[in-house]
Image (cartoon, rainbow, N blue to C red):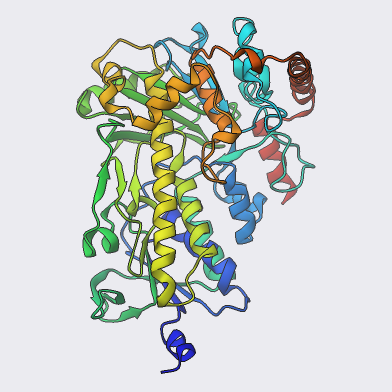
Length: 526
């Protein structure tokens, strides 16, 4: 057979996605925007999901990368914000992580999305260290922490869609987000949608999936199958038996209690950051949307019981004046196994979302991993079966790197803590549970802070600036090397610190509150 004819016979022309939710529909949208919406590459995309599987909705926070993803798919930012009950997320505020105190005691810091001014040209950390007792690192190098404490928005009404004064992601309603993506993918991007249960999976003689059989008696054939079926992992886990690299020895949390809390007052301020409040055996997330707050407690089942966890969360809710406790629904229990798949791409099956793995929602890594996976799949979609294995090797290597770096970054938050009030926090500092690369980095950071040149890949999920915000927010001390303190660099640093203060004052005068901006956007489209 002629080589060209053989390649055409195994060409990737039809992609079948199993599972909806944010993972399934984001993947469908990214692929369809690249290949199926009037492009030259003919690609048919079908998404099949069970009609009775609810959206888990834990990951209600995104990274700034979501702005680019939504723009790439072709969704208006205004439509997204209004339909998904979304608000602006400017970072994460950590409370009680260092010593177990409260924000009023000074035990809080911000990991903002905006990098320090001039960060890629000069490292500000060595010049801040001599003045560490005068101003927190985050406030010295970036205005966003201060702006977010005031509940101010990261942009103005006249700022173009997806543009900003301060970098931002989103807080959103996961169920409404999936509905918007579904409507856009089926209505504008040509994605076929089936609500059916998959009952059987058919392979060819080489083990490649050829079709999915449905409970209606029909079947769906495909060339590439994307597993977005959640923690069950119907294709990669159940069918192919790809195991999980268990991470419970590194990150202990395996349970969560979640609740949606209405505001006590309709005009209550909308927080600019996800609040992460450390507790004795875990931590509480608090995510502010325009109409409600999503609150949850993630904890280690090996260190506390469900009943004790419920008491901790209930106490937090009672202490929160903005919550309308009379209208609060019942708590929802979520159990998960922290870890990630040994492979993400096997034969002609790719896992994205919780089918690929899941860890606690600290730093909101769930949706950004979906974005990264969908983007890489779209950019490196194999044209035929013959090159699929080579693409799979690249995909697995890249995603494994991202998972390892995310786990190290999350573990860093625990290792730096000075808390001694429970075995949970003490166990987190056990050297046997600290990844070797992180332990080596901590030794290096005693004399040289994380820097842009440390990145091993071009699209590192947590850049050096993120490491600096967490390290020095948690009180870590780096003793600057003498040759890092040259006078000409110090002069530049002084100007940058001064410019940060001026920028903070200017933004404070000009930016509207989060609620004001969202209300004005809503009025503008009526």
